[in-house]
Image (cartoon, rainbow, N blue to C red; front, side, top):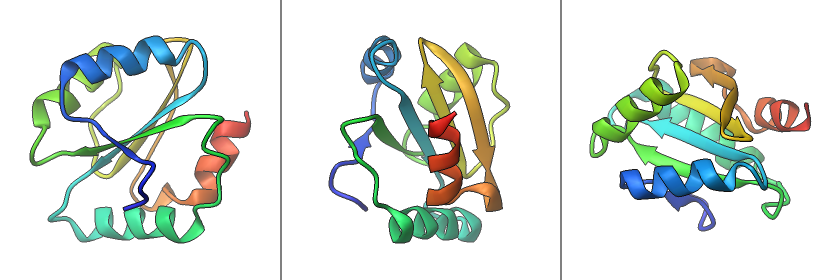
Length: 114
């Protein structure tokens, strides 16, 4: 895992991330450590990583350890749960989500550039 990824482990961090999304985009990566597709998505992100990380915050969520947080994200932003999944917040709202084979560093870059 890339060392600058923040580990999302509690609701307080989620609340803070939502607040922070008013200043810069927030990216949640929901990952299942037992899923091959999720492992491939994580690999694709790591292989293509070359972002200016001052422009957004990236949160890694281990779904097996933190399912309640994943459920809370789905409820707050009315985004259907998928795994793996990326959700991008701007201004306290979900502006983009992608899942499975659509996850890559290039698709994340394209979504952040919009």
